[in-house]
Length: 210
Image 1 (cartoon, rainbow, N blue to C red):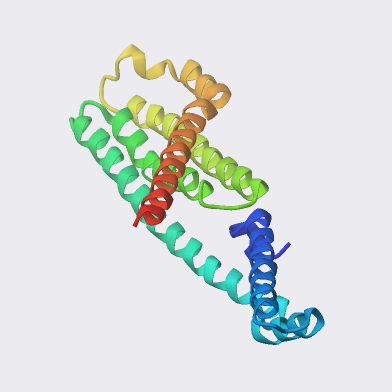
Image 2 (cartoon, one colour):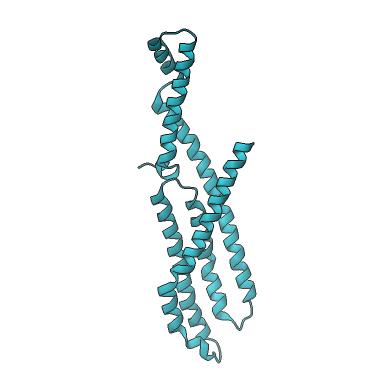
């Protein structure tokens, strides 16, 4: 399956072919109404509308360009939102007495934007396998960032002068992030997916109204 099928989706490709046949049938009916014989009208409709594969390729290319533009836009929005959230978390833990939170935020700096971008872009893809793959990749990256941030954060916390007892409770934290670290990633990816899908649907309705 080529890039168009993954990004645009098989349903949209099928609708393009249906649209082509509908245009050709409208042209044939109009020619018959003008007095042409059915056979001559069908041949003339084929000549006027053109080749089916060429029409499909052109429409798929235009739709692919539109979808790629949407993907770039939602990627920029998702990355900006993720970086802003991480920045707020880092600012709230800027006190040097909280090294664990600082290290964790730095590792989430790539995990959080990626999972939000993956969820938002997945809603714009046409094939369900592409959607699941992108969502899974985003959750995996966030999970890895959360685990590494927890592991390295406890190590930095334990290296400070006179670390508190909480700094040595890394076993429970690491086990927790290893076992359940995918849950917050799934929630973030799902939220980004739903928001992006809702925005796309509302945009389509506004274009229809306009």
